[in-house]
Length: 126
Image (cartoon, rainbow, N blue to C red; front, side):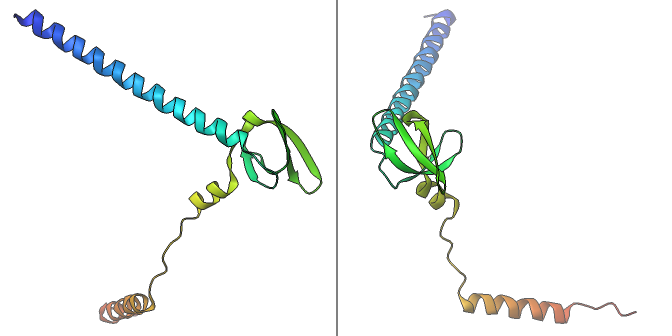
């Protein structure tokens, strides 16, 4: 097997890897699309949602192909179900992760350390 045989092997291996990557990406997209279709089919009255265009609203009526969203008190807009992108509660949870508050002992220790550093630091006097 000469150098052309090795080069051909690497080209075939590279092409196979690229093809494999494309297959996995398409499979993942298909799964995500399926989850989205299931979510849109299960929309229920009272659910707070966000549309693809970013409109926030509450579902007041849902039928097979469309959803009526109340976007302001007394203002109802009809959207195609495919325009519903996600649930508001999921977005709120992602944008406001729970942060553990610092314990008082850690905070007071930090304040004491800062004040002791300030006392030892030389001060400019005019």
